[in-house]
Image (cartoon, rainbow, N blue to C red):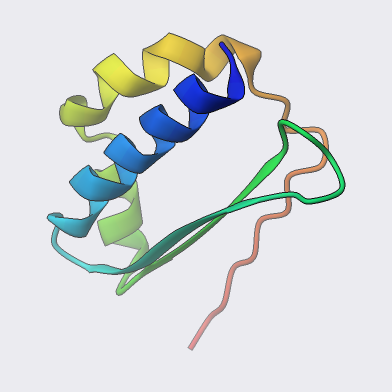
Amino acid sequence: MDAADVEKTMRAVMDIAREEPGYEMYAIYQSPDEIGSYRISERWVTGEDLRKHIENPDLYPYLGRFAETLDFSNAQWVHAVI
């Protein structure tokens, strides 16, 4: 996929996320230093809300289009316990 396809797909996922219970924030940033690298930030009210988002079947048509091309070697996961 080219960068335009990736960005279009990510924005479609963001639109779905905005309608889900527990959604607080979903942002996509394209790296100015690494062409084709994106940063995704999400915030959900609870971990259960995030789990439901990840399992949302409405996302499958989008994620399946490029999931095999994703490189998570530099992924950073932040978990906050309140």
